[in-house]
Length: 267
Image (cartoon, rainbow, N blue to C red):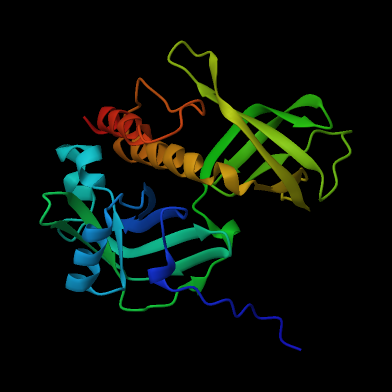
């Protein structure tokens, strides 16, 4: 008997409750940019859909938030290819391939971007296939209320893996908390945040070490999307920002923080 998931989700079903990510190839690098569903009035929504149809998603003006110096690596020109939209929703994660992104001005004067897809329904997507940021750094992980140090190999907005310390018993299904940290300019660790998840599987790698693969709670997806976007831009530019995002600020001002950090990393 087939177990294929037949959940159907239309691009017009996307709303402000979804966590949105734009992925694309920039040269040989895959980048992720978090996006936020645009805050529009009922009249602005009507104008948008009357003019452009229902296969569009309005998003806040990412180019404005990322400053002019990043315009050329965003949605203008031929710098990006294989542009996709990922939407994390309450019924799953869905993907639309080869989307087009345009900047538009509504009659009210509001400037936004719209994501257009030739395909109406989204492809069900495996959350664990998110872009991973290689870390290979020792961090604190919490298990059953006790902390231990382990080398975290990589992280995405939906998962991470770490090398299991010898002598520690860890089994799939166990809840964990990752205390994500990074080196500050003074070479001391600074804490980015604590992220809940659970162990998904274990495997032996070529070195003989045992690696635990984990899934991270969906509640952390939006923040980690932003964090990984910053780190990707820093690595692509070869410049490190003097500021970092930490998981302490929520609400509408996250974009200003993201813009400031990204602007530092490319100037």
